[in-house]
Length: 546
View 1 (cartoon, one colour):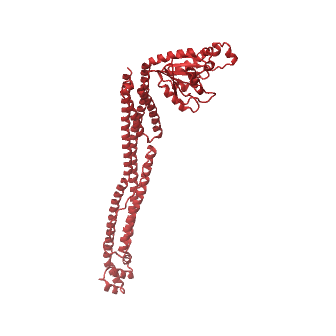
View 2 (cartoon, one colour):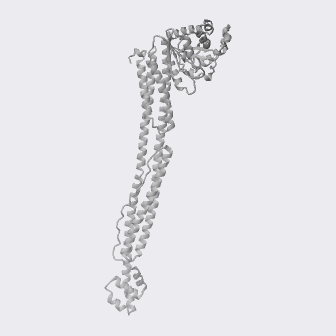
View 3 (tube, rainbow, N blue to C red):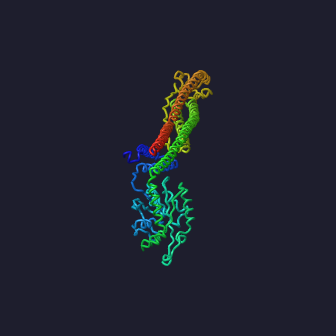
């Protein structure tokens, strides 16, 4: 749009447009805030800023006509449509009867080369659309004509009217006194005190409520539109004069002409005021974004610290659980070694030690995995509860490493037979001799009838028995040592695997931390850009109104 069509405010229009685009970007990016209350608050602030900036933009691009523009506002049934009939003789069918709503859309009519806009009544029950329509029309006025019914000037009942009065636009108040008279009273000479009751009180109340929107010197005229309508209908100039309308018309025409002549200065004041409002509303958004950035920085630091603390807690529980689990496994292997040392059959001793060692390792791994999973879930839940996160549940799995096949070397000694030999039992000595060596068969047969021979054989076998027992102990100890070494290695592998199970949580936390870091940067960027655009807007609005 050319600059002259915008009152020379092309730069301000451009900055206002960029501000709206910036707000749209922020709203789109923050539409899925983790914190609903925070997101809702920011959304309301941005909606307010957008509303003010759009009003400013409308003011910047609004074309100005040659005729003065007077916008009538007032509560429902105040007499705005009756005033139209009295001024122009038009719209008699639109004059309301009773309490119904008459004007539903703004209607512009020409009076004395002045554009007069009749708006829907404000303040009606469920009349938000009418209120907005009147407010929009009044924003473009050279002069606001407030038609105030004499029965509705209390501060509580005129708030919608005040909302439609933009800063800097002059106000002309037409007090419509609603007294009605009988035919006999109309035929008499009615005094102004009868037609217009409590003039001083009406004006005092009007000035009080207008002071709320910084209107300190309104023009106030008093009319009785009912009386004027009767005078026009009966072509009775006396009633028309008594109604106060002619004097009010003259005053209104003068006020409209003066307001139109002052319109450039008024428009500049309105523009500066709206630019200031836009700046204030945008500063609120920028300040909120900066506050959210500071909150996120603190939250991110706490989350990082809490994650490290949770990882340490998890690691401590894993180490403690591993120590307990593999201590039990070690005890089981030691017990298996004791059993193997007494087992007379090598195959059974070897299988017992291997199976007990493998079972102990598996049980240690299962116990460690269960403890680690519980510890991880506890730490995860602490982070979820403390920071509102939604992380996947950690499933810890520990694979049991294969233990070596530690064997018992040498032929097993029949420990029971050796014991019998040591005790000198004849039958047992024979069995022991057969079990230990084939060299003693002849002597053994002789010894069956010769006790001395048996004692000799026993003495001869004693070193062999002791050697076999020593060999068995060394073999069992070697197997036990091998399994102990394997258990230690299994514990190291299991601890590493379980500690690695924390990584999914750490990666999830890192993703959250990175996302928050990006949001922190975005908040900082948005707040800085909004502040810069607000400064540009203020400068452009000021230069455009010089």
